[in-house]
Length: 167
Image (spheres, rainbow, N blue to C red):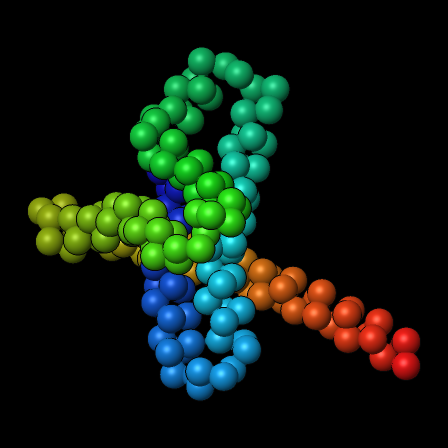
């Protein structure tokens, strides 16, 4: 469950930050449209990276204990793999779907933090660990968003260079 939280729980904050920043930009800014359009693709990239981690962990190690550990939370695992659907253009047109999908993981993170804060056995080390995991998730989601935005600008730059060479 920690791996799922590390991959997906930071996306709602990145989504909110991106929508806030793009809401402040002027309507005519072309970066605004590309930034918001990149959100579902970056979420799909995070899902692809998570799938890669799961495949790496199970490759040539199909022991009972390993499979049982992987399927400890089968519904969350299935829900995480549904993030791959955001590669489909018909699904990623609705940016709010990616937010709704990631809120499930954020809920588990928030529940864990609140349980530790107000529970009878509040352990500071567990809280620090959860906050580290959330920080890693934020950095991963921010990195994938930046990567997708950069990759969106590359075709425009190559077209511009090709147009200049024809003149």
